[in-house]
Amino acid sequence: MRARVIAHALLDLINESSAVLIMGHVNMDIDCLGAAVGIYSTVNSLNKQCNIVLDEVNNSIKIIMEKLKNEKDYNNAFISTIDAIDKLDEDTLLILVDVHSKGYVEDIRLVERAKKTVIIDHHRKSSNFVEGTLLSYIEPYASSTSEMVTEMIQYMSDKPQLKILEAEALLAGICVDTKNFYFKTGVRTFEAASFLRKLGADTIDVKKLFSDDLDTYLKRYEIIKSAEVINGIAISICPPDIENIVLAAQAADELLNITGIHSSFVFAKIEDDIHISGRSLGDINVQVILEALGGGGHMTMAGAKLKSNTIEEAVEKLKNAIDKYLREGDYK
Image (cartoon, rainbow, N blue to C red; front, side, top):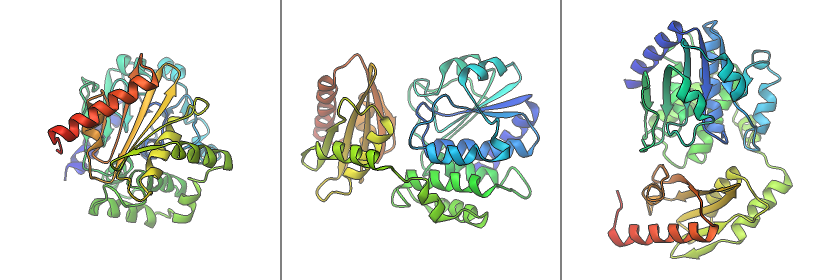
């Protein structure tokens, strides 16, 4: 099994390194955090210096971050990119989780300066990928990076141990990316979930990690309410006061619960960038559509980031990409 080979290779690299830094993508989500926590726990058990690089905590990971910071082993686990750059030396191992594209890493400076880099990701390889890695484990058929890390953990120790909260973080990552086991769910997904459940992960506690306050719920409803639906494809734009990529992605997910909608695209303007979250029930390949705009992801879940565009220009580009996709029958 490839996961076993990769796990053993990663274990060797960790043991050969002076310290380990774990970094995900900008606007870290629960899958990214769960994967980072899983790797951190394993490295920590080897008595190796390890930190997770994170500058800002967004609403999607706020609850679990508060819980983690109450754990003794996580008192000094999270550091800023500035501190990470200061810690980085030639023998430091940088592990990228849930990301492989230069344009989406938490901080490109760490990637550029690191001499030893590993990638663990479940997104289909994009053109702007990080090069020169010692180990690259990109598995588009996996449901999530949390699933991949859960598999690897079982081969990195004779008796793998995780704290209950760590197991719940990984299970939460799997739940989010599979939409509670509806999408991209295979036998290995359930096996990973079963392993985490045996370690004490509680499904009710995992559900509580996704709780929203009333304001967030109403903002998501506002995005959904403004959607334009054409031939089963919903397109919505976040109001100017909602500058939240995670909220846009959640709204795109929610739109698929509406009868007659099989695909959705939600736009959010964050400073000078326009972010697009695409979701599909499988009728169309949102990955192919958003790759035409420089993005990527999976058939049912993808994203893109546009620069130097107005929202109107970005919407027009998306509509042209959809038209081209439907016209050419690019259903790969």
